[in-house]
Image 1 (tube, rainbow, N blue to C red):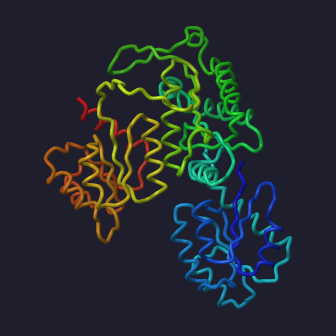
Image 2 (image 1 turned 45 degrees about the vertical axis):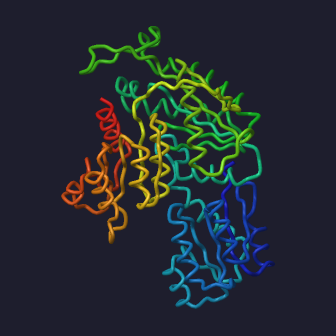
Image 3 (image 1 turned 180 degrees about the horizontal axis):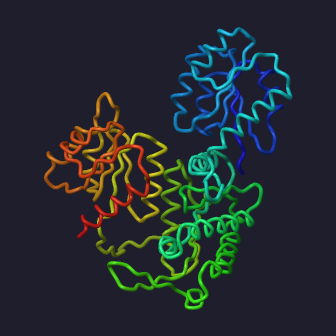
Length: 437
């Protein structure tokens, strides 16, 4: 299912059709656009891995390149310009405007195919998880978006290993890495060529397959994982069926052996409109699989609700994320939901204050915003000093390294970018626990 996507923007129908015929195969899907407006729609829907743009289009080429770079900032496709010009000045101008390569026409078909294949290969070379060698969240979110814009029926599976953090504490990182590698190998051996396997974090896996295979695949993975898991423990731990944890809080704590939880959603009963909606439903279904001890899977079904359902009061696990970077925002939201938090995402600074007062989160992750305006600083002041009933903890993230300014604005934590997910979620847990005490 990992079809690389190429977009050809070329006014010349005959030439673009020729390029498409050269490139398209089982591993590469090619879209043609004869104008820039059509190209933008394809970019938004399918996030191409590589874009070929001809100077034949009725649009200023340098301006088009600049706009493509801005609009595809998070996905960073490779951009190739084709032109009948072979003037060195034209080449330099185009490369300076954002193109990754410049090809002069006419181009030998074999060379053209080889060059494009090389660019696509390099595009993916930095998108692997270092431990499992599976595609990372950047590619996985892109694949989910492409599936949403297809007309086929699909199933998406979220898989992870329960109690992995306790296993790591006892057996160490090397053993944990080996366990994750084995788990990914089990999944890889069970899926077919047209399926997709990737990750959205170091310990969370995504499989995209068709509806008919999803339940059989889930059932097999539960069986296969439980069959091999004892080999990753000492003989005494495997025989006992649990391990003892030693720490400051408790002298001994019994923890079950690792197991796997699988949540599955499909578009059979529900229409999904965007990646965030998919991740939200996927995490909710995955959480249901974790309620039962041991390995388990849950597949989303049509929902039935009662009129007088009773709801118990729960701790405030609401997290508000105000992060303008879409890719980072999706990653933060997905990780927070995986850890059991309720999440609301805001992209406009003007909406943060009202949303916080309405949502009443225990923790707010607030970005500073543009370095010229630093709107987040003013929002932080209002949240802390101009609201009476809001007791949220504010984690202030920024590329502007002015700790004094941030803390004076009322932030509870100054966290400069870039940061590790483990660091920010360690603070989220601490602030959330303190809030609910």
